[in-house]
Image (cartoon, rainbow, N blue to C red):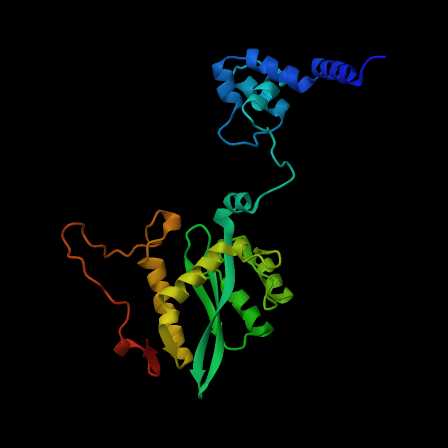
Length: 286
């Protein structure tokens, strides 16, 4: 009888002999095939070029004659997968692929004093994902289906609608984005991309605009009329689109005004966007 320990060692040695992974690693260390130029061509800067056969075909156009096994060995040696997550498309990749045609929409709320009680107003806005330009579409205390249909028509207006050059709109699952609202957009060539439930991070551009306007403007004021609220929001959006630098587009304004100061000549000075006396009646600055 042979001890079990010896039998186990024997079986492990046999397994190692026919272990393809161990054999492949040893062969890669010795010779992966191809020259340095071939290695550089096979390992692209961006993953997902295609399968082994696709890479062999692309290399053939560049004058590199290799077989699929050589491509496989070189990719594995560098820890690369030719088609990572073939059936998956990340949200980040989706945004980058459609940035020119994408816009996002959402609401933000503001409390306004009216007859000694607080009334909640909802402001609907659209933001261009490529340029970060924001547009206020409408402000209402109690938006309903009819109001939303009119907002959809305003968004897709062929002259100055914020969606006139867009083909896709991102929005959350708010009930106000009704079927009729989406049908009007679809008739104008804009398809709606509804976000999964409880995923505000997937509408980051819109969420960031809401944070900016509230932190830099709305949270510093008390409002007593819709007229004053609309005036302040419009003033901030003008500042946001013309004067405010944006980190997402190189820390520059979206649409700089023509009246730009000359560096080194004009003194540094603060220019208020509005003054208390310039605000509409029934207003208060904190």
